Length: 381
Image (tube, rainbow, N blue to C red):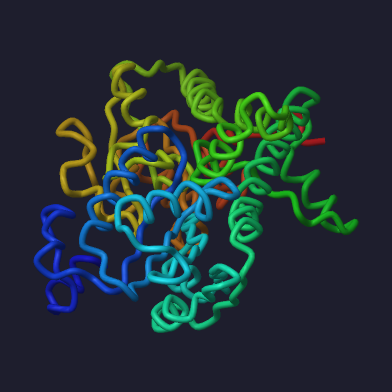
């Protein structure tokens, strides 16, 4: 998006924050998440530089996730210290918990947003700016409550994902297919559970903020436990691949593996595009990799994955002559690809590791391929 706006001339990319001194902005939007000390230090440096040229009457909005009371205390103190202005009287300070969870840009824009100001300074200017981007925005004067509200959704998803992993492990241990149990569960009215398909996910950002901000003040035990379970996600995928290859009589070294999509496999907080950790792990183990990034991940083509990884523009081309295909695509992205088409391209014996559950196990097995997925027991009873 930034590239599109730059070409249209509506956005100018500066090489550093210091360049703002030649044309001081009246509206400032600070982005990022207040997670680690490194990120807090970078935010403070940026704020300090901006505040030196911040004119009276300006509006400053912090977007992202942060601990409760961060905007009204830490950020406010930074602004008043380095600008000489008083928040609420000379400049307007507001907060908006913007958090992209990996959904499409259209869904992200359509999701209702929340923006908060202070009792003495409602977020009128910021609201007007953001309404040109997001069609639905609610306002509040409760800064701390808004900061907490921004954390709740991602933390809930993080904890729920850990529960799904645990239930899937239960099914594996007792030779039950998790997806079959899940379908029966939904028929009885429990429809919040899903396939544990995301691993090191963006929702970890909110959990890490809460864990870091609590310190010794509280246990926050459920969130900590969920983080430990979800952080083991890559090991679960590696174990799944290892099992699939063993069914084919192969090991990682010198074996061709296709990775179809990166949904849930990407690192949650990299400042710039980097190879998902699983790519680096499989390369270290000597696997020969081919990748179909998915329609929404074409930026991976710009050399991010390394010279040893073959990138293809269709799932079938990526799966060609491979012994195992790891599927991490949304159903809409997978399209009309059938197990028979995959089987015709892959080597034999071959196996499918279906993280997204976009394929029917019975259809894959009828096509002559082994089928594995997290939470799938062997008996199917």
